[in-house]
Length: 327
Image (tube, rainbow, N blue to C red; front, side, top):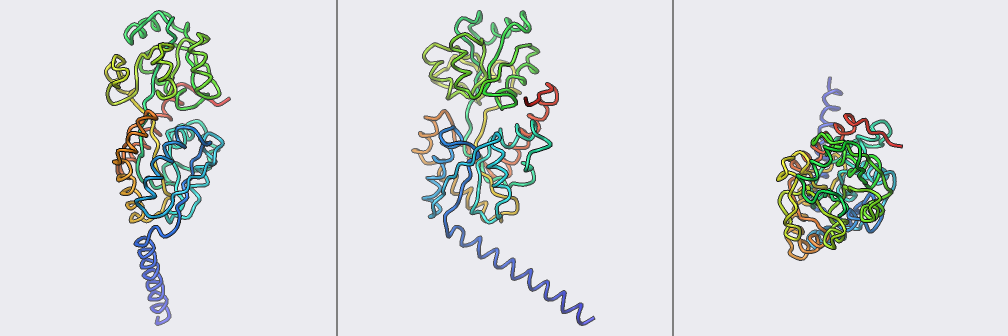
């Protein structure tokens, strides 16, 4: 009996020491550089936004935040490595709709991480608008006419996206479901070639992130029909949001946020989130994000978790209902 009591006391003491140690580590966080995994190649929107925000966060935290690009498999390689990292706040990762929603929907059997259970959301850094645009020779010049033309001619028109089972492909299929239209998907290896073919007339329609299509829209080489954004954008004020056009379900921008591995102490998570909020209120950061076609968020971990779950459910629904399969 005494031995049992002694064992219980020892276990309790060890747990207490571990809790104190963990608390002390959280109180001193960060006391060394923080690694931030970007699960895509350098130079893309995810990489650019990560560097803009973490550079300012570094100043607030007093330690460098070192961005490391780990691309491949639609972001799955980098996300998987981040999920396996020690939950101490010193290895973080950038979340996108692709890594947290589209990959799980398109690769449910071979994805090496679970987006809903392997991470602790910190905050959404920024949102970026999506757009549906057409070649200027398309017979309609506004969203109402665009929809009427598609409904009169099912299967006649083609739309391009950045690739099969990518977020922009799912956006196109979601559009078809919401509007009851039939347009043919043409996958490309990235937005650049898709935009070029839409401008050249090889395809009539494109679903894209607004920043990569905006120069062509402003030059009159593409006509924007609608954007996925909370409100109209001043530089293209005549273009309605999907909500304005009567399809609020399509009014979903893409986002780029910060994740920690599951089990990271909330004291650490909150310090990171607080530093992100300071960064996202900095006028220089706001302007630099705006130059990328993005707007700051800085929501709470709980709010970001809800955003992730909503997109996860959306992607799974679209893939199932449209029977989308990877090539």
